[in-house]
Length: 520
Image (cartoon, rainbow, N blue to C red; front, side, top):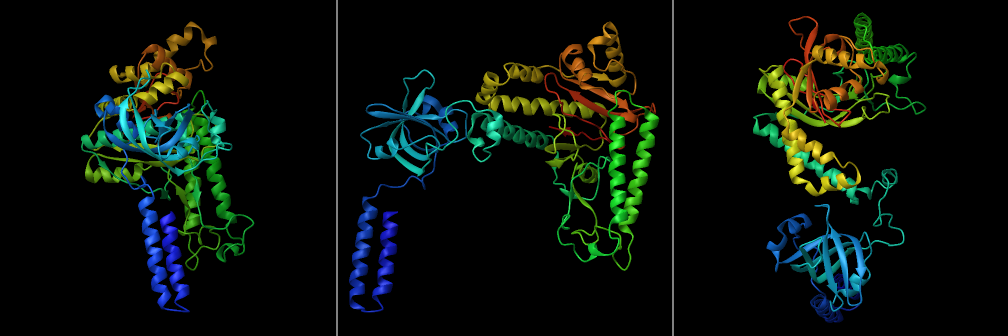
């Protein structure tokens, strides 16, 4: 920085001096250049441009890396200053653990070490040496410490103590530096990599489906609308300001939402009335048809009563709830495909079973059946879980210590134990027999063919009846989506749910026309 300032100063001096006299300019420029060169030669070399070794790689190498000189860059977790040296823990996010840096007070850059505080960004060059501490096999004996970015100790909110998740939500810009969020993101990254690895190894083609769409794949009308039209109270665009604009269509849109809510309520009832569901679905479809007709009616190129006429697409557009419709068309051309991207649901439900935004994996398989679908789903789940356990061992150890002691054992059992399979009809019979022993223990004791199984029913099947992950398949058509393939019995559809012990809400997998949907 000093050399840069000198050079800039020299150039500025030349520009000003040239206005008055030419001879002194050359002399001044030469003097400035000499001073700059001397300053640059005296300044220690910067580590910023040097390639770094990631902490995870360094720790994984362990004693095999003894004697190497490496550069580590990261953020200070802790600083412990002794009489003649300091311990600095540096973490770069590549692993849960950081590397301990030992800086002796004889270092030329020890003044930098002496001023370090938690949160500061540093670059350290040093030799990998054996560590006498029990918790680590190696440490870094520093030969140069460079401050990349300082951090005020009196206002930095993350200290070496446990913070609540509620508190971390208030500092979203810093929470990725915590053990919990960092570990969760590393596990999520491992699962994402394993997902692509699995499907690629089986010949699937990865396709990208649109996030903006006019299609409602689920048929319930619970979608986020995307619009460029002004919000209420803002200046209206010309077409939207027309007399009576949008009144009829807006009313129809509200009617569609109301009908969608009615369908959902009937399907989520403890006892599903098939005739009522069918009637509500027909009413929903009828209202959607009216809305579609109203929005598409053209008067001189634009319908006078269409609130979307001046919108970006000239019609209503939404954030996607699923990529399945597009993926199905690709599966009909490419064979086996899968999508992996964000989806959005506008369900007004504040429970752990509903998310406004999540990433969904949707394989589409041509020339397959329900049994092959379950085989593929089981292989997929086991592959990604096993990969995450192997790649993120320290992160899972942290989860076990602070959040769920039995997590690793359950996941290991998930990988090692074959998944059970039971038809919906058989599952209902098992539940009826168990509930009959003591109905008072159940919140929803009435279970019969056509019942949409509640969480307590699913948990009992997975955790008690089978004690393992279990596929429940061949559901009644009345309680599954309209796109599921009808079975030959006329009562059920080729759909399945995967129930996993200790993980509720569970990932759901369904088979419409030879399709696997894995929402995780």
